[in-house]
Length: 157
Image: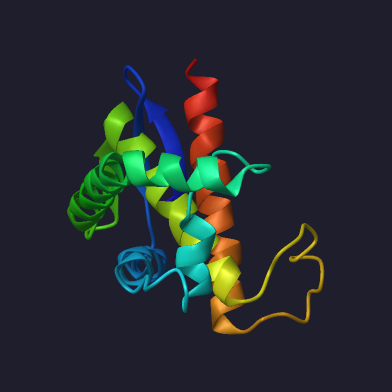
């Protein structure tokens, strides 16, 4: 079976996974469910919205006003990701355009959390090929998922 992401229909995407890839993607939900407090979890801090980089007071007000809406959107994306991933347990699933977008957002958030917890703050993090520990390997894989899925979706525009 050829694995990866393949365009189908009106913005849909067929996902084909090996069992190990499925297991790796199951970790996305675990990572996102483990996000803690902004003060103690670098992953939570990385997900914090900074709408005005030059004005912390305005950013804080934006977060206060939008936090509930952002959290609801993230919860919906995570739920859609988890449900559609479970449908892929046999190795294959077809995602609607909305589900594919939820995958992009959930995987992107998991990448941000994982990178923050690994202390990655700048580009070039994947250039040292001696970095083969499991969290770094997962970060590389999630980067591939996000990039591959983005290419398929962009090709459908």
